Structures are given as C-alpha cells and as structure tokens.
Amino acid sequence: MDVRHNWTLAEVQALFELPFMDLLFQAQLVHRQYHTPNQVQVSTLLSIKTGACPEDCKYCPQSARYTTDVEKERLMQVEQVLTAAQKAKSAGSTRFCMGAAWKNPKARDMPYLLDMVRGVKAMGLETCMTLGMLTAEQATELAGAGLDYYNHNLDTSPEFYGNIITTRTYQDRLDTLSHVRDAGMKICSGGIIGMGESANDRAGLLIELANLPVHPESVPINMLVKVKGTPLEQEKDVEPFDFIRIIAVARIMMPYSAVRLSAGRENMNAQMQALCFMAGANSVFYGCKLLTTPNPDEDSDLQLFRTLGINTEQRAQKPDLIQEDELLTQVNERIAARPTADDLFYDATL
Ligand code: SF4
Image (cartoon, rainbow, N blue to C red; front, side, top):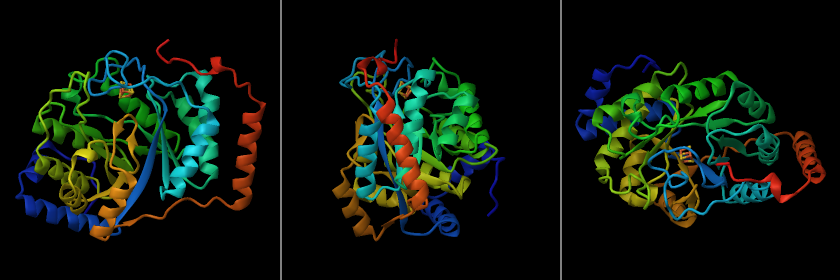
C-alpha cells in the first residue's frame, strides 16, 4: 500500500462504511506490513505546569475560564522533572512527555525547558513536550537541546474547530506543526473524539493529519473525558465501535505512524482496548495520570498486555556513555548555578 497525502472525504467515508470486520481486517493487514505485531510503545506523560491556562479549549479542565477541580501548579523545577523521568524509565517507559498548560512558552521559560530536555535525554529516554504554540526559534532551540517529539493536536476538523476553541486558530496550529517539522523534530498530533462533532468532522480530522506533507510520527486519538465544570461535561458518550473504526481508519491512512490510545482509556474496558490494538493502535500512555485526568494504573495495563500477549517496545535511546555523562554534568552544573527563588516560577495567566 502506498503512503498517501491526498485523501478525499469520499474515500475516507467509504472506509468508515466498510463492514466492521472488513475494516478491522484491512487495518490489521496494513498494521502487520508496517509494524511489529503484538508490540506497543509506552510513553509516560507528566504535567510540568498545571492549570491556569489562558486558552478556552472547551474540553480542558486546565483552562482558567472554567471552574474545575484542577489545582494550579507552577512550572516544576528541573530536578523534580528528572526524578519523575527516572521513575518512568524504571517502570518501562521509553518516552517521557512533558506537558505545560500554556498558550505558548515565554522567553523566561526556555532555559528551564531546555534543561529538562537535556536531562531526560541524558537518561536514554526519548523526549517529548507539549507547551502550546511555538515560534520557529523556540522549535529550533528545543530541537537543539535534544527534543525528539513535539505534541500539538489539531483536535478536530477545521470546520468544527471554532465550536471548541476560539483563542487560537487552526492555522496557528498548522504553523506550529510546520515549525516543529522544519526544526527537525518528530510530530505527535491527533485529536479528540466525542466533542459533538459529526462523522464528517471525524473524517476531516484524519484527512488533515494524513494530508500533511509528512504524516505525524505519532497520532494520539483521545476519547473525550467529560470533566465536571468544562463546557463539554454533558456530551454524549462515544459509541465504542465508532471509536474503534476511527483507530482502524487512522491506521490505514497513516500506515507508518504510531496510533496512540490516549485520554479516555480509563473508560474503555479490556475488550474494547483489545479491539483498538487489533485495529492498529500500537502506542499508549502509561501510568495513573494523563495530565489531569485519570488513566489506567500500571498494573492493570501490564495485566492486559500479558493477557493479549503484547510486548512493550524496548526502544529507549542509548546515548553513548560519555555523551550521557557530559549531558548530565552540564545539566547539574546549570541547576546548581541558578537561583532557586520562588519568583522564577509563576502563574502563566499573568
Ligand atoms: S491550551 Fe492546552 S492546557 Fe490550555 S486550555 Fe487548551 S488544552 Fe488546556
């Protein structure tokens, strides 16, 4: 099968209309052609700065515009982040994702973020960040520090987008993705299902992702977690078979990409997750917290992987020992030389 970047709505609708088993069969064939069967990649996500976000994403409990139970936390200190990364590595993660609830990082944040990237990289983990919009210069700096992946979701179709977010445009998102690509980093970009979008919006999201000049290396497909206090708390549940179909269509349209089960996995039973893996999902977030919403705990994930005969990918990077030592020494020196005054860490809404 060719890797394509010219999908049309009619073609994608035709995939969605296939009998369920035929769609899963096709997706599994593609999956086995491009990926190792029975293997998932495991990432851990840490919220390095929580809540008080000035954006108005209607699904998000971290927006300062909604009253939710999320407790605001300032930007974490570099040492705390490195401790969490070490723990994630010990638990079997190969990629460590650091997320901050920002519109975009400010110049004063960059030295800390760069040290986090260097420190996590020096542990031999793949690094990923999600910090909001990036300028071309910020993307270059992060790539220079060793950031492997940048997560920036398109969320939904261009047509439905304005119903969900008004504080940044779809084009803003596409611009950030192209800065990330130009800086040489890998892209993690997907969306959220269950926000009131139509079937065509779901197809439209996949078309936007698959028709990018290069497919995102990682495509997280989230099922809306309806958080109390957000405008979407009363949305209807997503029909599980509809969700599995989206995974299968994403697998067919973006054969090389890792398709990730992300938010909402807590609300999927083991059988539904198994069908998602059958449909081509081959990446998950691991651990009890997905930024601020619950995620299955590590033990139940391990049990499910064992039951299904799924292996977790052992692909932590192995920087050579000299480079690893040098990087860690540099990071530790920088940390030691820096004032630790509380005013370095601040409320991002200000
Ligand atoms: S930008 Fe991110 S943290 Fe901020 S409201 Fe939107 S999803 Fe939440």
